[in-house]
Image 1 (cartoon, rainbow, N blue to C red):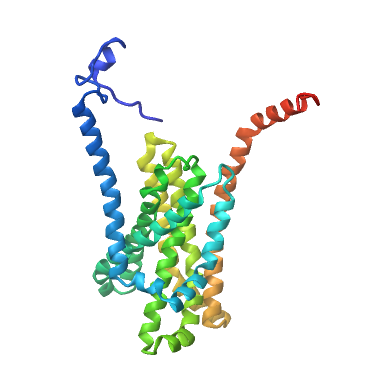
Image 2 (image 1 turned 180 degrees about the vertical axis):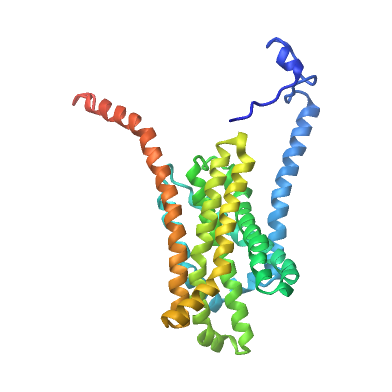
Length: 338
């Protein structure tokens, strides 16, 4: 049940013609009011830009910028991101409402790249507290830190810009922009993994790219689509929250819980599942990883697509009367009207 917006007792009892400005109601009237509005807007905008600036500085600090600007590592990163890009494009194409502007999609992708750095720092700070507990500590780390933190920063990428844009005009747009934020997150994460993997070999960059770059790229290509799936779930609920403001908070939290649980379950089971396939079925390690990740991501991709298709069906049903009326109107036109 939706909550009724609360009002002051004076406003409840007063006649609609009564001027209650600065008594029980408020609106912008005086110069001071205008100044207050301007300062609030400045602070709101400053907070957004300060967040973006800090994220950009962190990107430089942890080596993400140098990784993506290196031609060899950049090329491998692009290859590793192709499966995630394909899935994000599918979610984009499934949007039955208005087409989303390319600039807004790119901006959300870039914000996904930037906000990922908050997760990298928080994960690094928290991990040592869980490591001494062993396997259970690792699982707890995934469920309490990695899943919630990474899904929150990806949703932040949508909230910083796309969420308030006029083009974000349907629930399904949340899934589209969530998928783009997930793509950005996967892109920078892949770049860092590939860069650090090559550095750890002790080989020069050329030999490292040839020797281990391909294997890491393949592994990261498998991990990328998961980020798109998780954040598309969270983004869908962010869209639902936008158009249900009376329950906005719980809806956003529900989306984050769903995304974080799927994410943490993947992290906790991928090693076990891959190992079982390798030992029981006899598949090579990379093949075992591919099969397990394909099954896991495929399951939740199907659940996501069912949710999207349910929205699409409801959208068509809601607009059929309008489309039928328009078709009837066109059929009534004479050759002179046309």
